[in-house]
Image (cartoon, rainbow, N blue to C red; front, side, top):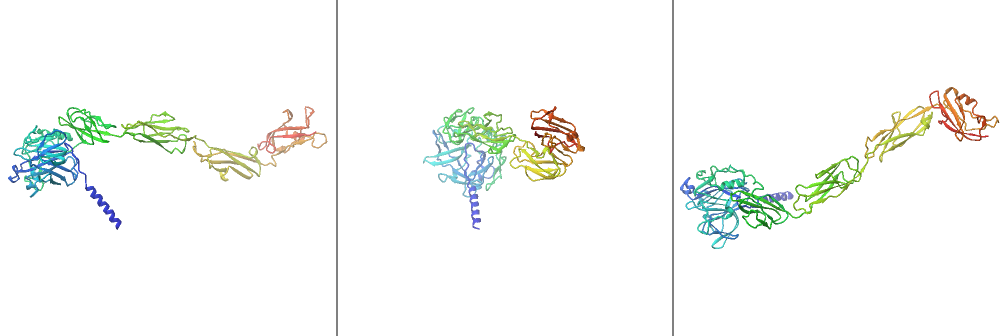
Length: 628
């Protein structure tokens, strides 16, 4: 419960804080008068004879707590920067906004003068959503827009002090109106003058009693409305108040809308182009004749009327100056003063550069710029060779091993010194694409065995990776274990053996699963389909092993040839007749000459009747030793 109370208290503080709004700072022309009636008695009753009703149009949001000063004291012409009003017993009243924000484009109303009939007994100044306070004395009742001899009204925002003989004012002139038809110039202290700042921000009426602006829909820009308001041709003398005898602030001027559309001022108008600079001084570039005024920021102009005035003392950030032309057109120029900055840029990649990639993989590089400005340019390089890409990202599929990638940033920030920066370098280990292979061999001679023998098969692979998987198949039936060898025992019939490799190697160009070629093991009945070839004989006429003879079943032999060579490669014996070699054999002579003791080699060719190759112990070549 305690935590809930703290939370509710916290949110209540937020709500209170939101309701305490900073006041709106108003500049010349941010508020204009669009309707007035200085003698309500002419259309209502004599009791309202001195009641004054004023309609204001605001071009800026007026927030809660905003203070606006109204005075009909006379303005005295002086030199210098101070402003002086005559202390003539006229009104000097501060209006403080107590209601919600009044949006730009809204028309709002106040009443003063003999307005007790409207505002209530004892109250001479009132307005809906405003509180009023007399400044520098009890002169709230002195605020009276006099219709009998003419009068003036100033809208101000600032501070008044009393010097004893005059009021000193420091602040902003916003708007002014006179019912005399003219503003008095010179040093005539019995009449009011007009500050030069308000030359285009005032209205000189020709009707002291009442008038209203009738051109509110001919333009939607602030300067357009102010220009039209300044033109007396856009005003009507007759005003109808609704209701005819208003009370309790329920009056409006018939024909004035509640609000109008206010579009933003055109940029880069007669005031010149906006500037982005790094120094605290610059030169203006307005067009035509007119008057400069500072709207926000700081800056001292060499002349308020020189369109090419120099300005110094600019503050960091945006400084806004208004150029009010002699034809009452208003435009503004923004001078953005920035501090000298150093641009920098860094790049990252996806995948990250610590990864090893395969040739042809896609890699995206992303540049992150600091102080790059609003539209920086990017020059990507691979091995210091420029690419055509001008983008904060760069994607490629053609990286080679150890290629060096970086980017050069060119900042368009006006205060960038220098205006270029080079990023870090990223390189990758790029592995080539590989194709896995698998091959199988056996320990059987010519892949032929006798019935009942065992055979071991050996798999030899390439690009199998760090953990290849081997699956053996005998006659397409999976056998064996995950091993590079497989042994088949007691083989009785011909078998086909292969192995399947599953590679986990990176950068495979093809599938990671491949089969070897088939190794066929041929089985024969070695008891029938076999020969015997001796490895020694002694032709010494002792009737014991005097001839080289081959043993075997003549009926199972289809083709036969035997050749015997000495150690010099000379053929010393040849026969194509198995029976003759089996019966008579070689007697150790050649051409009638006895051959010397030594080692001789033999070769046989042919086949058994089952088309198996003729061999001896699965060999078709061998040696024999002749002993004398």
